[in-house]
Image 1 (cartoon, one colour):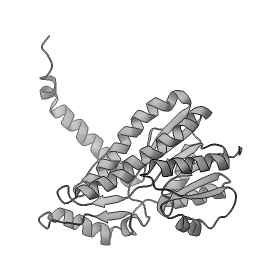
Image 2 (cartoon, rainbow, N blue to C red):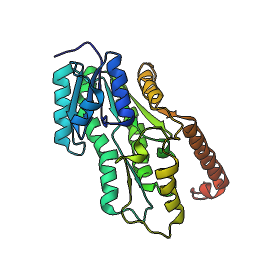
Image 3 (spheres, rainbow, N blue to C red):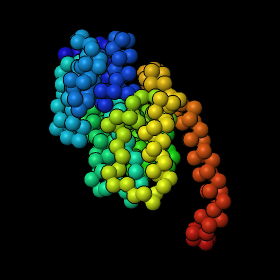
Length: 281
């Protein structure tokens, strides 16, 4: 069935930015495919039973589950015009504290799940010669901090994958945008979206303080407005030449510029050493 309305496929829609985005899109008349691990929670949260809304239970780390969801979306709406890879969660804990199991699980969802969905959608977008892939990263995909090395590592991976993907799919009329939020006032910090490493080491006192702050001090004080972030995601798809990267929030702007300045300064300070490794002409 071919539906003339544009169709959005969004992962991680049971809460946070994903849920807000689904509600805004449905209110604007778009077709929306909303995926989550628990589809009943999405249905309850959205409260929409129209033909424009297709909630699907999907296991992102299963290629078969993802492919079935893509097939269902195409059968229902005829195409997928916009893909939002929003699903993901945080892992806070030092590198030494984070177990192999915890690390692999974080990469499975934040990176390999994103890749599974992207690979499954691309053949349809290439056939249509149209599409826009929006990958939710974080400003912490540009800068890392103590206690966040694994989570930041997943987002650094999303940044690199997305930058290469944008170049690969541009000839097919497909755009890629990386959304890089700072702290957004969702329940990310006080739900299952943030996991603390199970085996903390007390000697890492600064990490222990960081965990405490993210559990007790920061929630409810994040500067980012999730409604405005969702509005911006919709708006960026209306740009004929959308940006590759888009920071959201004044804090994200500050973190990113701190990284740019520190990186530039370190490169220049070590310029002589850098050039010293060239063959002498």
